[in-house]
Image 1 (tube, rainbow, N blue to C red):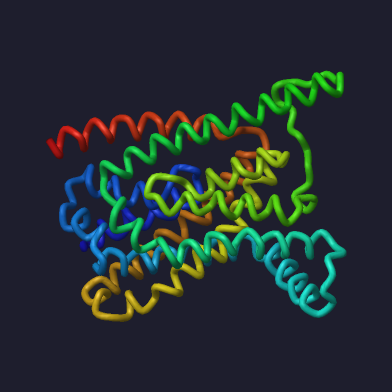
Image 2 (cartoon, one colour):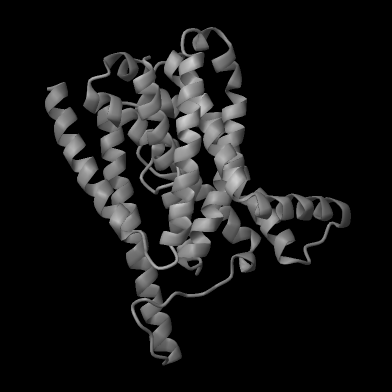
Length: 299
């Protein structure tokens, strides 16, 4: 792997891990588009230098998220230990800490069980293109379902409502069952092309959260999951698979960290007044074009 490839993939990882467009899908598609055949061949291998390289990018992305949400995480960690000590949920921070724990369990269990199998089967350009198209449909469908729910609620309540109105439900009002639903939704991101942040936001929106809180919950949930996945696979980078790519991994991790920090700053502001539809359009366009490209190539 060259340093140019490391920087490009690092920047891509940092952006697409947080944008609802699937980092795994893009890390599979971009090398195929650019003709980086050594990386394409390594993507779906059981063991490879590319997987070891991605470990560093995941850790860097998680650290950037920790830095941006550092004040939130200080409160959440303190609240978690209060829960352990008192076995009660009495404050919004304690409820949020509990919701994060509950929503993390499904993807943790299923990820440990199926991640390796799903990656080796589906981490191929054509499959990633198909799932990226499906991701676009999910984002568009989630927005449609949310708007339809708002219209029904407005008619029921007989109150005027503009198309910009948000449900306004607070994040800490989610219950355990709803947090588990969000957690289960995250498991779809094990398929290259399905976005973790996208499906998590959709799940949050369908539970009545506005876009800003749905995005915040998505980013907070992503932090321990991405960090744990990186640390769990750290032996890959430190072992034989990492030979020859450790310095490139360091450079790529730096690029990923910067890109992730800039991305989360942008998205937190973006979702205060915008929705998922622009990302749905992008995923549909990029997915369909990639399907045509890689179908023709395989033929």
